[in-house]
Structures are given as structure tokens and as C-alpha cells.
Length: 109
Image (cartoon, rainbow, N blue to C red; front, side):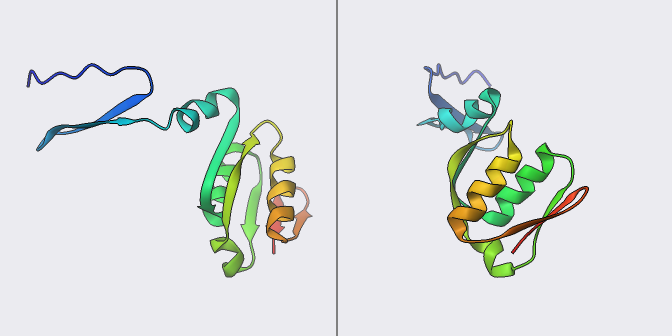
């Protein structure tokens, strides 16, 4: 239990009880620290995962009506402070549409 590793900034290491310390890897620092700056970073993430994350950040619910749309990949850096803009940008990029059903549901199709 006295295995030690000194990490320099920008590196990460995984530890598990059976194997001990793994190799030191470059950490995805941008993604790890981006949320603190109020940014959401997506790198080829299926739209359904993006929506799941957005639903945690905002009141109301985003629903994807088209299962093929749910699998489309989204990449980009978005400001979490204005999630309606994020939704508009993503739907425009994917050639999809969004309809709000006030007060709290947005449907992507």
C-alpha cells in the first residue's frame, strides 16, 4: 500500500484495488475543467447523451422524438449559461427541428 506516483499538471492515473496504480495518462483537462467555466464540451457524443446532460442542467425536459436523431453525433463547446442557445445551435447543425411545448417540454425531431 505504499505505492506512490507524483502527477504533474495535466496528467491522471487510475487506481484499482486488485491491480494498484495504472499508467500515468494525459488527462482531458479541457473537458475536466470546462464545466467549472460553465462550458459543456461534447466530442462526437450521441445526441441522446447530450440531451441527458442538458436535462440535468435546466428546468424542463428535452425529448427526442426520432430515434435516428438520438444517435446523431454532436461535437462542440457550448456555454451552459444559455441552454436554449445550445439547443438551437445543435438542432441547426443536425438539420433537426425543436418545438417548445410550454412551459417545460422541448421536442427535438
